Length: 451
Ligand code: SF4
Image (cartoon, rainbow, N blue to C red; front, side, top):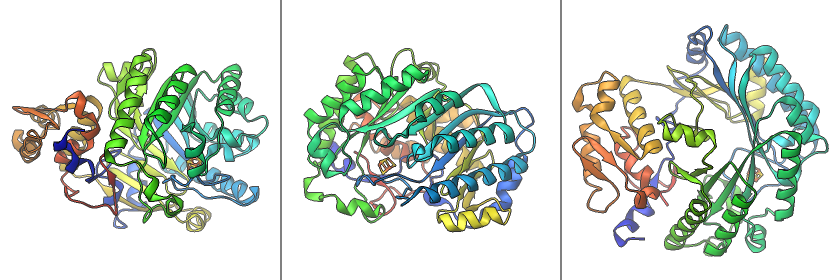
């Protein structure tokens, strides 16, 4: 890593899967706004749906997701029942629309649901929202905890894409993060999914885990390529034990330092590029024939709570505890406490806890940040014109970007800000120049480090 980059690498920055970020949501925005924004969705307009399943059989120590161990299936089944009721509430709030064009089951581990309960949920979504014939139905899977008949249930429900958590293949690293998962187990699941008709397989890898080395990262990246993963994401472990309590089980002294993290990320990139993958945005890779690659080439790439996506829909309904919904008017997040979330649904309320209404300035900044995060460059004045704002509205952001030029994090030519390929790991740092809400200072309580 260049010496000039080191101070920026340890700085905390948002992931910018949304702007404003969830840290800016407040209780001042809630169910009233959610109902108004849902009713504004146009007749015939396709929507996206995210459904959160917050259960895992065991916890991986690195995990920052909203999940827990259910201690018996009854809690999962009760939760699935509440999900169905929540789906009906949102369907009533939305009224007429164009049906689901993109459906994503995330978690947690959606395969915590038994096959019959998963099928019943998809059936409820089909009945209440309608699922378009060309819809992408994606599901995140933990290869260690598949139920009998689950792969067949996914195929029968129309699942088109499965994302497998692989993270690392090194046994000592797996032990240190409480996730023992031999490569044969992953390979078997990939084969089973493909045989059943779920052809598109994504894999998630990580670097920066305790005891992890460049060699481990290279092995995992080669494995993903050899398995023919359509998309591979490579995330750096964010050690935030004050936020994700079970991370306290990770030995902080065993974590790779900044330089080592950087080398690991670079090594994964090298392996995947050599295997023919296109680098998408900050940390995703896709095969040349994957729709994400086409979206990136055609400048249709988007960024949302699931990361980089070719999902073009403007409305996203988040179902389940903690889920976030996105509307043209703003964001709302469901209650995080599962008991309160379930009680709100029983009372016939949309189980919304907090949110934010977008201002014109938020929309302008969000557009600039998304363009930069997706395309590695943004023309600030062109964004102002596109969004109907005065041409100088983002000049403060340009000024902040110019301050990053001497360190080589970006180039600024007139109103065009570009992040050179070598500085890609600092994309979020440059994007923060366009953020009007999050101060560019150490704020480790809310966000992870840049690298
Ligand atoms: S990483 Fe995945 S499987 Fe592990 S605890 Fe988190 S959500 Fe569950």
